[in-house]
Image 1 (cartoon, protein in one colour):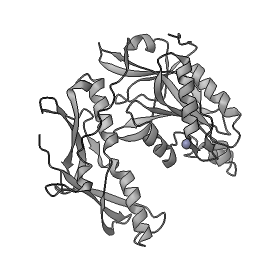
Image 2: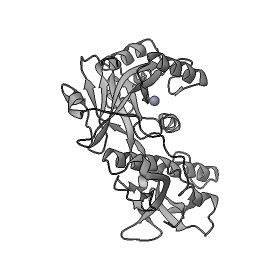
Image 3: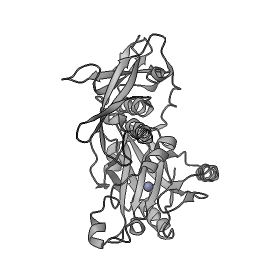
Image 4: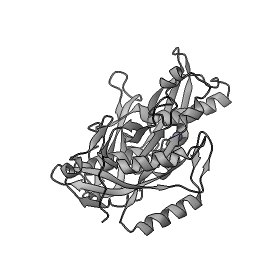
Length: 348
Ligand SMILES: [Zn+2]
C-alpha cells in the first residue's frame, strides 16, 4: 500500500478569532496507533501477528472547509497480505493535536506574538509531503517496533463482574479494569504517612481475554510502593533506583504479574489550604485532576493502551476519593472501574 505522507500545521487564533499565524508541527502519533491497535485486539478484529508493524495516518478532511483543514484522522494498519485494516476506534478528533498546540504556543510567546497564559484556539491542517519525504513527514508513517504481544489469560468476564462494585462510569469505549478494595486501602494507608508530598507506586496484575464476547480486561492484583522517588507537593518523579527496586519486588512475587500502571496521591488538602472548605469542595483539583506532569510521566512510562493511572484525592472536606485515568483516543481521560470488594485475589 502506498499512502500519501502528510506534514501538519496549526493555525493559531486569539480567543476573539484574530489569526496569529500558521505553525508547522511534528506530531507523535504513537498513542493513536497504540489505541487503535488495542481497540482492534479487544474486538478480535485484529490479531497481533497479522500486523506487520506498519501503519498510516489518514487525514479526515473537514466536511465544510475541505482540504487542507482536518476534522480528525484515522489509523490504518497494513496486514500481512498488504491489505489495510481499518481503524477500530472510529477515528481521532483534532483534540489529539492539543499537546502540539501547547508546544507551538510556547514558541509564539517567546516571539511575543502571544501573551503568557493567553487563551488561544487552533485549527489543524495537513499538506501532502514532498516525494522522498522530510523528517517531519516521516513521523506519520514509520516502521515502528511491533508492540510485544499481549500476555493474556483466558477468563470469563462474568466471573470477575460477579459481586464487583462499579465506581464511576465505565464508558463502552473503555476496557474493563478491576481493582481489589485491598489495593485501594493500601494506597490510602501509604498516603497517610506522606505529609505534604506526592507519593505513589505501581499497579501490577493480569490481562485477561474473554473470547466469547470478545473483550480484553485488566485485573489489578497488587500495588508496589515506589521508593527513591523525587517528590514535592505537586509532582512525583521516578528514578532509576525506583525502577530497579520495583522490578525486584515484582520478580520476588513470582505470580506472573505484569505492569498495568501506577498510582499517586494528590495532596489536595495541602494545595488548597488557603481556600475556604466551600471553595475546596468545588475546586477542579479535588477530583479527576490529571496534571500536565502526570500526563508526561504516563506517556513516557505507561504508553501501552491498557496502562492506567490511579489518583488518590486527599481532600480536607471528606474522606479521600479515587480517580482512575486511562487512554481514550490517544488522550488521558478519567474513567470508571470495578472494585472487587472484600474479595481476596487467590495467589496463583
Ligand atoms: Zn499528579
